[in-house]
Length: 118
Image (cartoon, rainbow, N blue to C red):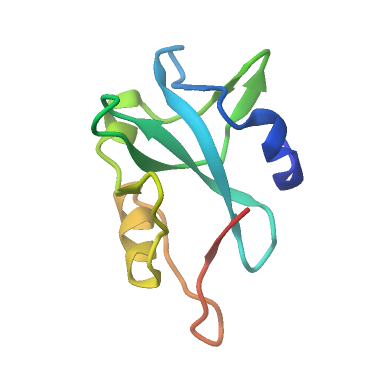
């Protein structure tokens, strides 16, 4: 996996599923605020006039020459919670992102957000 600080080098590269099918292009990485480790990525998907950013977990993701491979099927990622290409994930939307992938969601001990964009 790559470090969150390396996102500039990976932004715009293909994101593919386990079978090698292109899902979209890497836009940004969200880190877990408890660990500061990459947790989710946003992937640009859709037609040129209707682009949006979908969220995909980075657990189990690997990098190859020019791509990021995620262990989630393309169909699941394409139907994940999304934001506009110039939008931000609202705090109240975090739980839905985790729920879509059947992941446990626990906000920070003080109720703070779990995800921060890098």
